[in-house]
Amino acid sequence: MTDDTLRLACELALAARHRAARRRRRASRRAAADRPAPKRSPTQRRGDHHEAAALRLLQSRGLTLLARNLWCRAGEIDLAMRDGDTLVFVEVRARARSRYGDAAASIGRQKQARLARAAAYWLPELARRHWGGACPAARFDAVVFDDGQPQWLRGAFWLP
Image 1 (cartoon, helix red, strand yellow):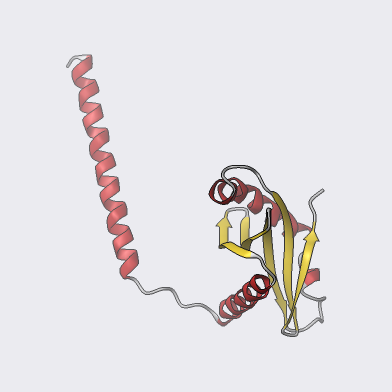
Image 2 (cartoon, one colour):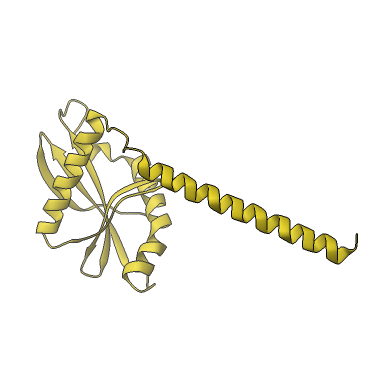
């Protein structure tokens, strides 16, 4: 076999692998669309309820929703919102009892670091989508629910 024949055979084999992988991905997406959504636990449903309440509170104060539940390996951003020209990353926390501290106290240094890493991951994409690629000013807010009462903590924490 000549080099050209071998190169052509390799290219054809690679193209066939790509087509097969594409077919598998399409079939997988179709199968996933047919499956019912997984059931949410009671804790997850409570979290969904608090996120929806926080969203309503912030929208009533003039913020605009950009995205919800932005997940990456570093962590999850509950809400990404726009406040004028500022990108706001919102963490939603709830505590039924304050035996171990209130909801705001549960956003410790490690949680702040995870939120910062997740925000750094999503910042370029959000800037591209909503600010035309220019990097906006950003801040971290929290909406905390203590005994069911929401409180918006604007600028809940800052990064050093």
